[in-house]
Image 1 (cartoon, rainbow, N blue to C red):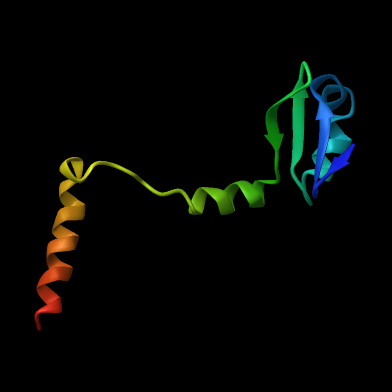
Image 2 (image 1 turned 60 degrees about the vertical axis):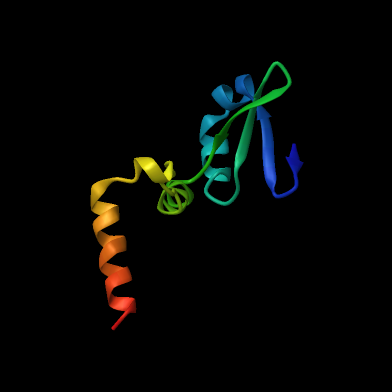
Length: 81
């Protein structure tokens, strides 16, 4: 079943037709449902790596790691030049 540029399948169908859905996932996400609810998404390794590159670290200002603070201070010092 295809919906909005992604394919939706049940967990059971994924198991029975893994090779097929593995090939489909090279071009578009495959949403895997269980008991009628979306549970997982099968994507290509290229898409996974692209998404991983977009990961960002988030933390409170008070918890900023020292190496980030040093970089920020160095950049701030250069702005006055």
